[in-house]
Image (cartoon, rainbow, N blue to C red; front, side):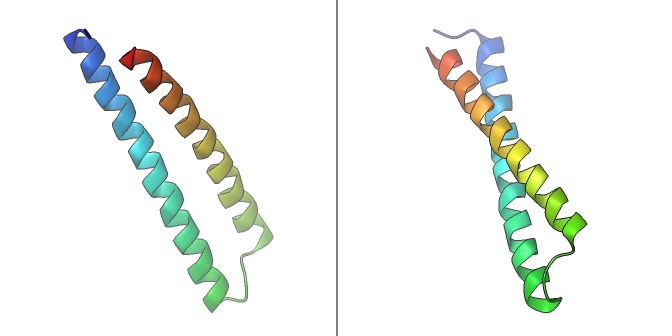
Length: 72
């Protein structure tokens, strides 16, 4: 059984993971909208968005592994 602290930390991790996933989804929508209305993204914008997506995907993966470990 988890302690109150562990339960709280699990809730915090889930909230962070969910926020990262929401932000990644928002970036996908933004990229599609910019591409549609402005003949594509500038190189620097595309590079920045791709970097953020890779980092957030990596963080989500780490948070999911921590979540699994805490639930054990």
